[in-house]
Length: 193
Image (cartoon, rainbow, N blue to C red; front, top):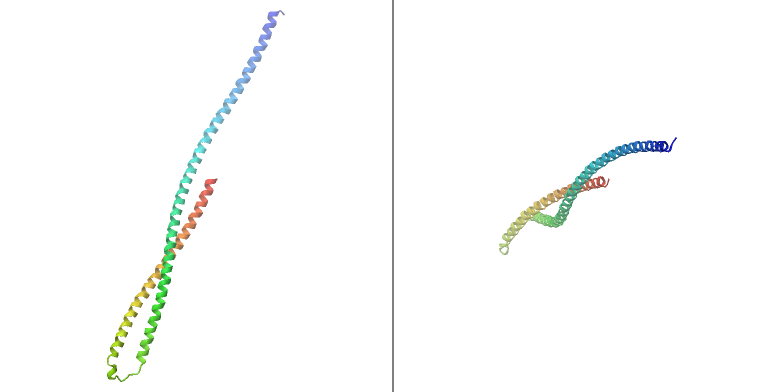
């Protein structure tokens, strides 16, 4: 075998090796291309999931902000109602004291009337001529005072009714406030996940 044939044989072997390497690199390239396509699809899927997740997070955040604002309004309303309730309690105590005073006065008037009805008939002398008029005036005054006391009594009962209604409103607001706080906790827990 001459030198030319040896070179030719060596070149053929080298060409075969290069062809084999080319085939291997093409196979590797195809595998890498497939992996790349899978990765591109995964990235697109992750982006879509992230977009959905972000949209859900923003929705939850918006709902949470609305609930917090609503809870804040409810709290302010509750504070105002508690203030009104305390004012009404003070007014109720004052009215109650007035009422007791009026009831005491009415009782005294009633007792004095009863005593007057039981009093024996007296013979009126000349010196006593002006006294029955004074007694009648006093009776009229006391009757007027009794009617005023009755009106005050009705006002006090109306105030008590108002207080009972306000108490029911405060109970309702406290229940609503607790429910909203629970909802906010649930929403915060969902947002943290």
